Image (tube, rainbow, N blue to C red; front, side, top):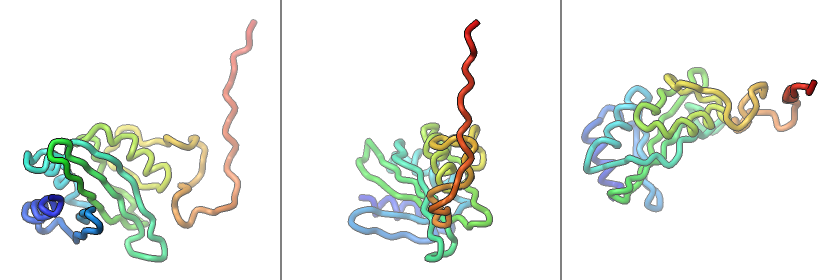
Length: 165
C-alpha cells in the first residue's frame, strides 16, 4: 500500500521527488527542501492518503559518509488507511534550515525543537525554537558526529530561591 503513496506523490510532484526506496516494507521518499511543505500538506489533505498523524521528526548526520551532511526525516502514519511513509529532505551543513511543519501538524512542535536541540537543524517559521532537552546555556548539539566526546559545558545556573523574611 505504501508504494501507492510513493507513486501518488511522484505523480503529483514529479520535480519534487529526488529519489524513493523501500526496505522491508518501509517506503521512503526524498524530496527537495523547496517542495517539502507542499508534499507534506498533500500527504495530509488528500483523502486517499490521509496522513493525519506525524509519528516523529528527527535528523540524521552523515558526516564523512554522504553529502549533503544532514537529512531531516518525517515519519507519518494514516490512522484511517493504516499505512505509513517516511519523507526525507537533504540539508547542507552550511545552510542547515528547513521550513517548519507546525502549520500542517501543530503536534510537530516538540519534534522540531528536539531536532534543533540535538542536531542544530533550524526550522524556519517555528514560533518558539528553543532547547527542549538541554539547558539554554548548553553549547553545541550533542548528536552531531563532530560533537566532542570529551569537553566541558557551562554549568547550569542554580535556581534562585527567595529568602524568607
